[in-house]
Length: 296
Image (cartoon, rainbow, N blue to C red; front, side):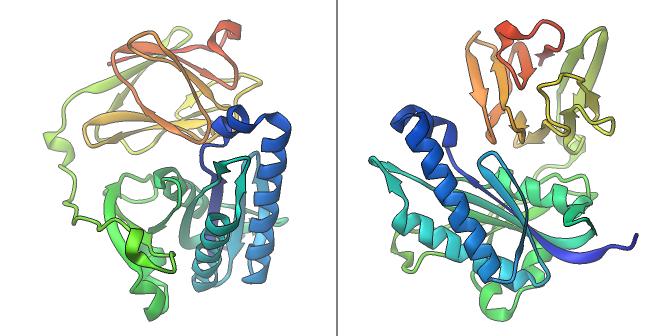
């Protein structure tokens, strides 16, 4: 089956797990449902197609990357202006990549999807992060709103690639000025590695590797057959001198850190340090068979 170019968008609600604690389960569920419904309406209004929703995240595809960016900017504006529940302000994180992908039964597959997922994982609340191919495909007026702010390693590319933020606020008075960023150090200048131990096997993740994937799917670098794990549950990347665990799952990830604290991640990331443990999709105290140990 041949691939065609699509703009793939991921948009998720930043800090949704803390929203449940702030305003309670039912109000939070209603707020998230309303926010995702708004996202779906805006995507469709900009000639996009919703591929799926996963928890607090929506995935969409567009034939034209300009439509994807206009949808993303409109969504950020609408959420920023209209979504506050019981004093809790809601915010979105959005990532977009434009490139070849395979469409099958309204689902979409390929490196374009994985790269778009990396864009949203790099975004903070109220940000839209784009890949460089996306920026190059935009019309001049939208391209002028994009600013490079960082680099990241992505499997689809041989070298670290630049990441771009795109302006969306009606007034830029509250926008932080972005400092120019330098290209990260080459792999030869990096030191150290992360050891992941699952069952009786140890896996070394080095600084020069691209995303090291963990999940239930056979194609993952570390396969964990837990029924609570997502197919591609999380990944580890080396960024600015740190090994960072990035969750991209349905059920979340529990991490016992080097200082013996338990931290829950859901569509969030955490730098790893010392020695600890990782549990996919269930708390560590409930996990008997599928605990991953790590050490640095």
